[in-house]
Length: 255
Image (cartoon, rainbow, N blue to C red):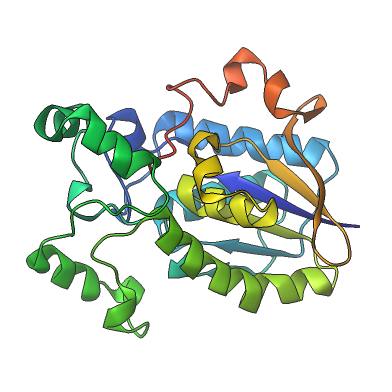
């Protein structure tokens, strides 16, 4: 049996301000730092050790991983960063307050952008796209790979390329892997692992800062999954109030 741990970054400043984040490189809040430390303490208490770590090129996921590994005394393990693990790109909605977007476009339209697996938000203006293309984080990946906007399926496609090419080989070698990423990136990987249909992903949420463990067979098919607390395994429906994945103060699966 193989295990992999997914961790969604701690609360970000844009999460707190109810803004679309996407590829905006925003930092953690104080609660985000606290959540990352707590996640590391939980994993250490439960006896987890990692050989390798993966994360995006966005600081909220990177910093969450750094803090978590510091708590576990594992700062020395290899860390691999990839834009393919970035949050879903929200196009021209990035940085905007979600309530204001609803007031402008209507709840039905915004709900479609949020909930549909295939619908993309309005594209990023060309001048903003040029700024992203000139960001040194994305040097060498090719301008065609820097999106103007993305659907969840677009995010899934790029994340799965990385999963199959980089992460699967580590798992096949029995390396103990942790991925620190983003709500929609992790939703995409969970959707793939659990073979969830496109219309079934609507209700799938990944909470901030709570370790999600997948146990896989030798063919990397899921045997079971669960969240972790200080007391051990916690199934989705049994998460205590302070860890409630349906609490809007505790998660923002829109990035």
